[in-house]
Amino acid sequence: MTLSKKLTTIAKLTFVSVLGCLIMYSLKHRLDIDFHNQVIDHQLWQSSNLIMLLTVLSIVSCWLYFSFKIVRKKNKKLLPVLRHK
Image 1: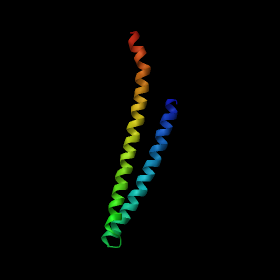
Image 2 (image 1 turned 90 degrees about the horizontal axis):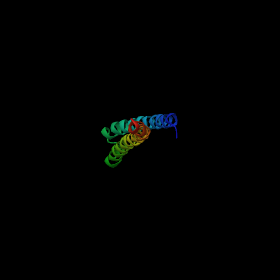
Image 3 (image 1 turned 45 degrees about the vertical axis):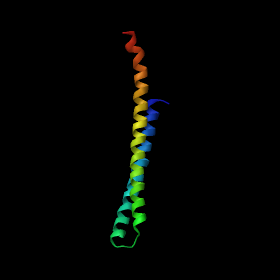
Image 4 (image 1 turned 30 degrees about the vertical axis):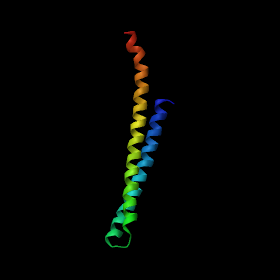
Protein backbone atom coordinates (compact mmCIF):
# COMPACT_ATOMS: atom_id res chain seq x y z
CA MET A 1 0.00 0.00 0.00
CA THR A 2 1.50 3.31 -1.04
CA LEU A 3 1.62 6.39 1.13
CA SER A 4 -1.07 8.18 -0.88
CA LYS A 5 -3.44 5.22 -0.48
CA LYS A 6 -2.75 5.20 3.26
CA LEU A 7 -3.48 8.90 3.50
CA THR A 8 -6.67 8.41 1.50
CA THR A 9 -7.68 5.60 3.86
CA ILE A 10 -6.95 7.80 6.87
CA ALA A 11 -9.00 10.62 5.33
CA LYS A 12 -11.93 8.27 4.72
CA LEU A 13 -11.73 6.89 8.27
CA THR A 14 -11.60 10.42 9.64
CA PHE A 15 -14.62 11.49 7.62
CA VAL A 16 -16.66 8.48 8.75
CA SER A 17 -15.50 8.91 12.35
CA VAL A 18 -16.38 12.60 12.43
CA LEU A 19 -19.75 11.85 10.87
CA GLY A 20 -20.34 9.16 13.50
CA CYS A 21 -19.31 11.53 16.28
CA LEU A 22 -21.70 14.20 15.02
CA ILE A 23 -24.55 11.70 14.92
CA MET A 24 -23.69 10.41 18.40
CA TYR A 25 -23.40 13.94 19.75
CA SER A 26 -26.76 14.93 18.33
CA LEU A 27 -28.35 11.78 19.76
CA LYS A 28 -26.74 12.41 23.13
CA HIS A 29 -27.88 16.04 23.09
CA ARG A 30 -31.41 14.91 22.34
CA LEU A 31 -31.24 12.27 25.08
CA ASP A 32 -29.99 14.92 27.51
CA ILE A 33 -32.96 17.12 26.67
CA ASP A 34 -35.37 14.18 27.01
CA PHE A 35 -33.68 13.09 30.22
CA HIS A 36 -34.17 16.51 31.76
CA ASN A 37 -37.82 16.30 30.78
CA GLN A 38 -37.86 12.83 32.43
CA VAL A 39 -39.20 11.20 29.27
CA ILE A 40 -36.32 8.77 28.95
CA ASP A 41 -34.83 6.36 31.48
CA HIS A 42 -31.40 6.79 33.05
CA GLN A 43 -29.94 3.55 31.63
CA LEU A 44 -30.40 4.66 28.02
CA TRP A 45 -28.78 8.00 28.83
CA GLN A 46 -25.77 6.22 30.37
CA SER A 47 -25.47 3.89 27.38
CA SER A 48 -25.35 6.89 25.05
CA ASN A 49 -22.42 8.24 27.09
CA LEU A 50 -20.69 4.86 26.79
CA ILE A 51 -21.24 4.72 23.03
CA MET A 52 -19.83 8.25 22.68
CA LEU A 53 -16.74 7.28 24.70
CA LEU A 54 -16.17 4.10 22.67
CA THR A 55 -16.52 6.04 19.42
CA VAL A 56 -13.91 8.58 20.50
CA LEU A 57 -11.55 5.82 21.69
CA SER A 58 -11.87 3.96 18.40
CA ILE A 59 -11.09 7.14 16.44
CA VAL A 60 -7.99 7.80 18.55
CA SER A 61 -6.80 4.20 18.27
CA CYS A 62 -7.24 4.21 14.46
CA TRP A 63 -5.27 7.44 14.18
CA LEU A 64 -2.48 6.10 16.38
CA TYR A 65 -2.33 2.79 14.53
CA PHE A 66 -2.09 4.33 11.07
CA SER A 67 0.28 7.11 12.09
CA PHE A 68 2.67 4.66 13.80
CA LYS A 69 2.46 2.37 10.79
CA ILE A 70 3.35 5.22 8.40
CA VAL A 71 6.19 6.43 10.64
CA ARG A 72 7.55 2.90 10.93
CA LYS A 73 7.53 2.47 7.15
CA LYS A 74 9.34 5.78 6.68
CA ASN A 75 11.95 4.83 9.29
CA LYS A 76 12.57 1.47 7.59
CA LYS A 77 13.24 3.28 4.32
CA LEU A 78 15.58 5.76 6.04
CA LEU A 79 17.60 3.21 8.04
CA PRO A 80 19.57 1.76 5.09
CA VAL A 81 20.42 5.29 3.94
CA LEU A 82 21.69 6.22 7.40
CA ARG A 83 23.73 3.03 7.75
CA HIS A 84 25.65 3.67 4.52
CA LYS A 85 26.74 7.13 5.65
